[in-house]
Image 1 (cartoon, rainbow, N blue to C red):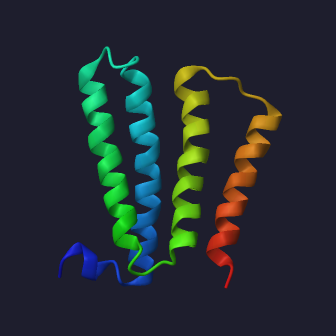
Image 2: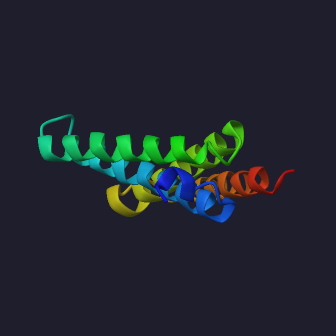
Image 3: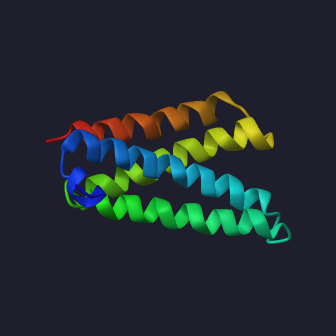
Length: 115
């Protein structure tokens, strides 16, 4: 059974989708570390991981509706990217920023739970 067939099972598709969203954070960190393309290894890693993230998103579209999948994928990436910025790059940590990330997470959960 290949990945495309395996992901027709809903729990697996959701796990793959969340993984694809987390890969969004990985390529964002690699892109930031590439320092405007002066560190080519990070740039290459960023492109490779971004491609994998897109590929996994595409596979999940066999099972999960496109609007839902895209909302979850971007939400996981946005929340994770904001947290990575705080933890890895010293971006400001404020109550408003954390509440905003929490709202993204709540929105993603809401989209997943909506009929």
